[in-house]
Every structure is written in C-alpha cells, then in structure tokens.
Length: 216
Image 1 (cartoon, rainbow, N blue to C red):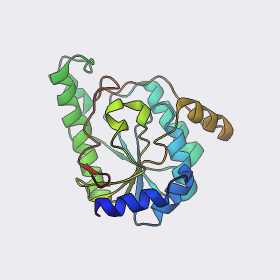
Image 2 (tube, rainbow, N blue to C red):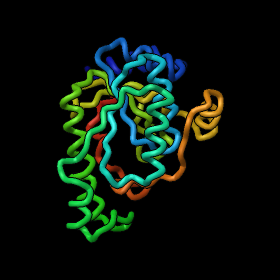
Image 3 (cartoon, rainbow, N blue to C red):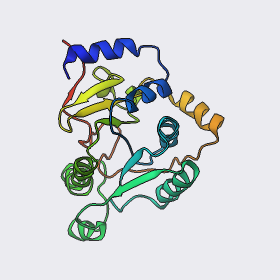
Image 4 (cartoon, one colour):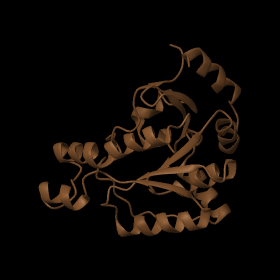
C-alpha cells in the first residue's frame, strides 16, 4: 500500500470514533488485536470485541509478568470472552533468569533489557504474527506514551515487516478519556505493571517498527 493510499484513508477516517475506525479495519481482512495487559488495555480489547466478537487477541506471555498482571489478564478474558492467543518464548523464564542474574532486568541495564526483549518477547511475537498471519493489526498505541511516536503515528499505517495494515484507533486518547471509558463500561483494570523488555516508557521494545505512514 502506497503512502498516498494511506493519506487518503486517514483523511476519510478523520473525525471517526475509535470504534468506527476498528469497524472499518476489520472489514479490510483478517484482523487481530495485540495486548500486553498493561493499564487501560481493557479499552482496546472491549472496542475490538465490539467490532468482531471472536477477534484473535495475541498476547506474549514472557513468564515474568507480575501476579497482578496475570489476574488482570484472566479477569479481562472472562469479562470480554476474549479469543486469547497466548504465545510463549522458546526459552522458559526460569532458564533466562538463571543465565542472567536471577532477576528481570532493570531499566538502566541496557544489555540485559535488550537480551530479554529479543529472546523473551520479540521471538514469540514474530512467531505469533507469522502463524496468525493478520492482514490487519489493531494496537493500543497512543501518542502520549512516547514522544518519539507522536510525530509519525497515524490511525492507519502500513507495517512493512509484517505486511499488514496497522490500526491505532485510540492514538489521541488521554488517560482522562481512558478512565472515563473504563468507568462507563465497568471494565477491569490493573495499574501494577512492569515490562522488562522496555524498562521505561522511553525505551522501545522493538515490536513497533518499519512503518509506512503517509507521503512526504
């Protein structure tokens, strides 16, 4: 898909609600939504399930999530009747930890963060994307999460790595809007979360890369 095509699509969808964007997206081909069950994730999962009740939900369970994250994941699965597709690394979390100091990496441990990201998160994610082979990938990316994303992200993009449309329907939403949506729909949430593959909000884990957005 050309940058000009993407420009045209984004112009047509300008002013559309997140649900309207997702409903358009699932009509374009086989769709999935990805999640890591971080705070506010129930918003994108609820939106996606409204557009397509059985939409596959790709989750990379690297095995070192906090207990609260696993409880939240199960609560979300039951509440939204999620078609959850968990993918696990080829190396167990116990194995990785034994070879890497016995604990998950801290934000300033760059080499350990990159090793964890590559082995425990990127490999199973790429495997999941290959096996599920989506034509449409729906994400919960928001501009506010990382300033590096703000200038380049659009609601509809092309992911060159996975050869699919990448849909970011809640790109402009703020925590206030997310909180309101959670409350309106009585959705579960969990604020205790840590991603060893990122370390902090400014570090990219590598899942979101090689995108075509719009014409220069």
